[in-house]
Length: 378
Ligand code: GLN
Image 1 (tube, rainbow, N blue to C red):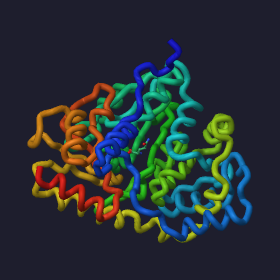
Image 2: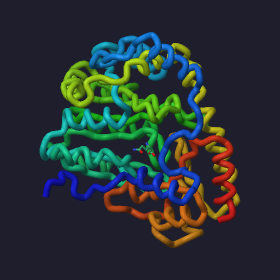
Image 3: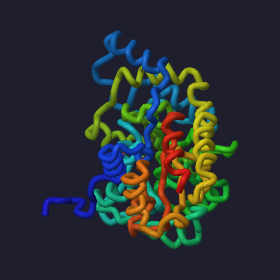
Image 4: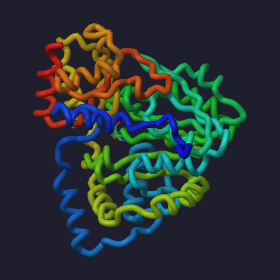
């Protein structure tokens, strides 16, 4: 009787990681690197802790870090955000997403999401009384039919949540998608929450089209990004939200009571580390090698490798191997073949099963080799 989210259990990432640990399986389920971040970054953290920067940061974040973020966004997307009034440092991408939804979604507001969807969107909208309208992107291409999306829009639509590059499918939005989106939101007051935590992980020379590139979209958007993904430090739980001042002012009203401010020495360390653009410009190449290694290793198997344009997740269709549901197959793979994955159905409200699982390849070479050894024979 006291549950506000009676249909929600423990997240699939925690479940699969636990199953992996119990079975001593190689954990390619939850998305996190199993290698060390750059020691230079760690040295910066140590330096600032030792120097005595151990008390509260300003509520919106340390100015040096916000300036570096503004510089990165401008260099990458030619979009200008005022560091002090339009960028807020958050305790990770998920907190930025939660706070955005908490700030703007009221009872009976409608929010459009695209599935397969990252697992926090829907419960958070529900928590604030919002109603989710969903478009299901499907294997193998995960294309969006914008005419269907247009039909989901009503007077009550408050927000559209995008995740580009998309976790788990690895799909990125194309210019055509962006143009269709512009047509849909034009002359409405719909807000856009754009989860771009994998923005620097896009492959094969393709371009990440950030929501902030187009002024018509930027003015109504909250752009969320994550240092966990950028610098291999998911456990530091630090990210940011960039949005026009009017939206940021509202966002911070909630942010100040949600976390108030985030980790001071880590903000200072990140600001120092970001002065060198090379620290993130090589990320595509770094992960593309891992993606290609995994794909080559599984090329002779009976798995069908779906396209991976971005993120550090590879989607695999396994219908030539088993006809079990993706959830059962993922369990079996963990227990019998000692590789943990995430079943795609967990990213769909209606548990759409297309016999697809997700593998995380943000892993050291040796981990990928062991996983390939176990999977390549299937
Ligand atoms: N973003 C990570 C993933 O998709 C997981 C984060 C989490 O465990 N909540 O696997």
